[in-house]
Length: 70
Image (cartoon, rainbow, N blue to C red; front, side):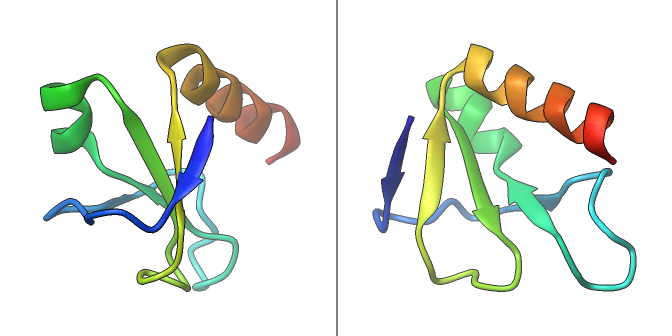
């Protein structure tokens, strides 16, 4: 996993586990993942801030964590 301010993908998608009231939202870039295999995740409240670059396993762990603590 890494955190970076590098080039931003064109399209970010809100997680289905995000709070519908505008809080606790994360987004990911599925088109970027399809092309590169890298799973980018960011805080939707800070779209110009850093994003995480996760492996497939790391992303699966994040989703499992959200399910268990949602």
